[in-house]
Image (cartoon, rainbow, N blue to C red; front, side, top):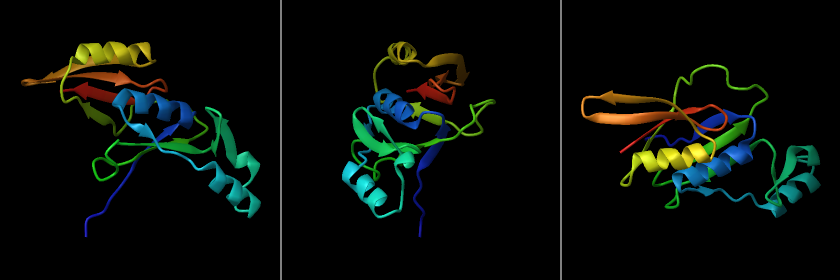
Length: 144
């Protein structure tokens, strides 16, 4: 039986980074049901300190996720998990974001204006890509 998986990215501000990546990829931030969160607190399974408010909604403090608009059958969920430390070295794993169409240069400019940093351009044979870092420094590649 094949396994399923989600990609988890450690970060300092999971809700801000989930918003950033959802916008960058054209994906959706997974909804966190405030009534469920309140129920978990009322039943003693969580405390107020486990929550925060993001965009006016009660959410779990420790994480946020994004999903492809067509669901997890189309692509794995990406979960942003809060950790106390900042990123200090190169990722050992990264996302390769492949555009179906459009201009890579235009998308790079859009992502830069939203907080990404261009790290370098790469090529191998006929394939080219741009390596960037998201607002918290996590590397990813963008190509066709």
